[in-house]
Each structure stands twice: as structure tokens, then as C-alpha cells.
Length: 97
Image (cartoon, rainbow, N blue to C red; front, side):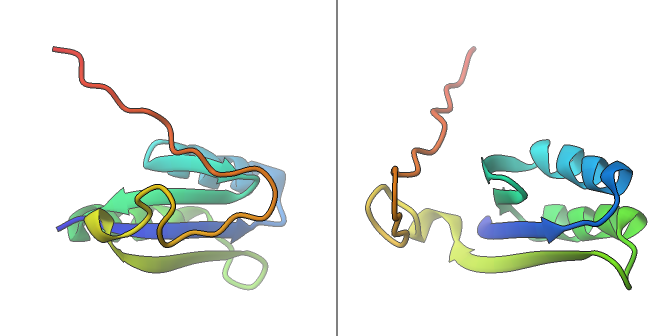
């Protein structure tokens, strides 16, 4: 079962911040500066946390992973998320066969 996570980070070092950004970019949608929306299963979640552990300095940096619940039950356009300012539009995903 896939779950949706809101992932935010506050990284003090440019090199570490770039590594965290690149790691998250491959796993989710970049919705704002240092904020990603990721849909992960339990294995992907564990792998992501393990990968982030390599880059984060635990005294200086912070990465928050907020579990928003099952991916299929939340964030249908207009449900579960409120925006102040311009609306969040999830990227369109298409399957090419």
C-alpha cells in the first residue's frame, strides 16, 4: 500500500542540501523550495530514510517526513489540501507504452 508523505528539509550546508534535494527529486514532486510530496510504499520509505541518513548531520540539519495517509485517499484535487495563493497542481503523469 502506498502512502503519501510531505517531506521538508532544513539543511545548513549547500553540498548536503543538494544531495538531499537530488534524493527527493527522484522520489517525489517538488512542490515548494525544500518541500516534496512523495508517494512511497513501506520499502521505499525505509530506503529513503536510510539514504537521507547518509547526508544529514544530526546536530545541524533536519528532515521531516509527515505521513499524510494512504495515497489513494488524500489530495484528490480539492480535498485534503488548502492553498493560500495560487493553487497546487500535481504534475500530470502519463504512461507511454
